[in-house]
Amino acid sequence: MQKTEMPVVILVGTPYERGIAHGARFQNEIVSVLARDIGALPTPERSAAGRRAVAAFEAVREISPDTAEEIIGIAEGAGQPLADLVLRSGFELFKRNSDSGCSAVALKTKTGAIAAQNWDAPVQKHSELGLFLHFSRNAFEFAVVASFGGLGWVGMNRHGLALVNNDLVLNGYREGIPSQMVRRILLAMPDVETAADALAALPHMGGRSYLIGDRTGKIVAAEVSARSGANFLPPADAYLHTNNSLLPTTRNEENQDVLHGIYPSSAARLAALQGALSGEELSVEGVKRVLCDETGAPNAVCKTASADEQTETAFSIIMDCGRREMHLASGKPSVNGYRKVVLPAVSGIMWSTGIMRGLPQSSNAVVSFQ
Image (cartoon, rainbow, N blue to C red; front, top):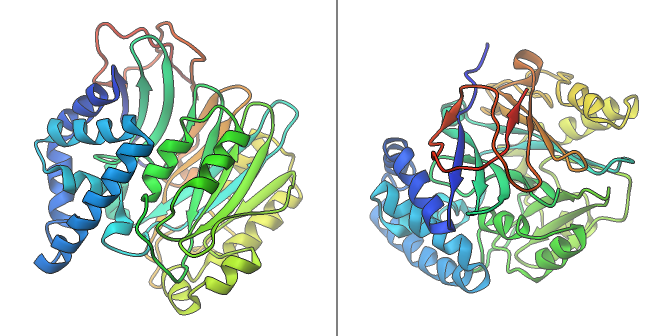
């Protein structure tokens, strides 16, 4: 089934101003999803989540003031309580695991790293996504695919650093920084080394894997845990990850019953990724073919909702760090194909399609869609 292209939103100004524009543009959508996801919580649970949100927000404000200011702006723009918008970017504050199971790839190439992912989610959440391009007053900063009212799921910054990630089902929980906020902190880093250092230093609330690449071709992969912190995979030319742990430390923390209940296809998707990549060139075009793989359908890398795993590929993204290009498909890439989004290194103005949303007249962004 052909999917409608996700909206592309250009946000310009300070983090707070960008948040205001985001919240105002998608106010109706944000009100609706908050009512569904936050408003439906029983009062004791919502109160407890709100208290955790206050603590998480203060931690983020200390580590990343820009991220905190953006959340404040989104809340004000949408006319909604700040705590609810913190919860929108912090599912870990009211439930332990995400409902999005994903298949991710990171590769070294001679022209820079490639970071890619099929992001799978319940079908009703597919229409809540946009590609958000963030600009300060003078320059492009980063691009993220985010749910309306959220900070972002995957993205790439102006330095050519890109990240993808996967939910892991681990035992243990701690007060700390939700994963969407972790991603935003990492996207402020210039290269893999500084991003890895930041990942190791942050207090992680639960389990997640991160695959990060940069324009020099360096890649790193880590599995983070509330109990053991950041655990890095051995150096490699390619990393493949789904929703099951790969390292002994995190595997010992894994809740197998919950894993198989939420993501029964995880191990099969990992094996399919490995098989598909083994015969492919390590390039954007090769990764496109890997992410279109439907071995084991419906519970495949390119996924269709099924009775036992009611998630489907909502978008597929391939980020070419050396060329600062995104290849983005709405829905299953085997059906819809990829658009190329050429991101700017600095500033300027250009666009080639009429799909912009909220583009300020004063914007000086160079963005090309092909």
